[in-house]
Length: 305
Image (tube, rainbow, N blue to C red; front, side, top):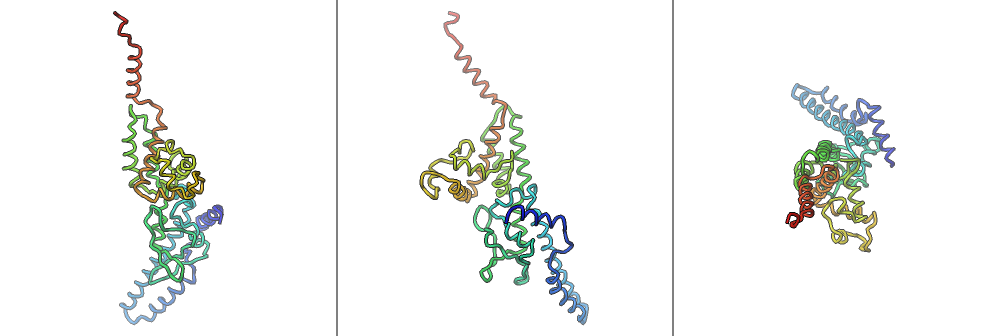
């Protein structure tokens, strides 16, 4: 499946939205027996019981309809950023669901979606998703599916915060690197959506993942700003041949970002370097120091002797 195919399916849902996407046969299989039960009810209590079942089923169908709409939004970069590159994406499951290759199935009173074998929801820095295994297939509940999509949304708040800090570094006379790092780490990265901060183009049309992998390949950690050493990279090199290929770098990146605390520091360092590089106004302290050193060099103790 190509990205264009995926995007076309999602756009088709948005442009030709149906009142109800749930297959009619599935609706009839549930509602017709309930209709019959209501007609055969002998008293108001029995009728109320049937109506409660109808309301419960209506809520489930509503959740499924909401899921269709939310999945369709994943092709919108302003809402989901670089969705396909994220650790917990469900691109194959999304595609199958939207093209009716798979349908919601009821298991123990709840609706589940069969997860495509190529969609990896385990590992990484996100909490592992609880899947139901049945007959060698994995299923995700409608609610967990919706929650997983929320986790992969573009973090617009974090992007605005990063941009604000980077674009206002000239407001003060001195650039305090540690203070800027703490501000970004504590107020943006830690409470933010890490999947978005890692994979999405948060600032300047660039993203942390691509820049990090390139830095691993080229050993330009200083330019990236992250606190890594060649020794650390060498220990994680899967081929251990003294050379880090792009494939090696992708594997190393995966290993490095398994630790949530370290990942938060890497990202905060990354955006702090952006702020430092974006600064055009020299530090006042540096200017004073330069003037003092210049005066010392020009001072001649014997000038007035």
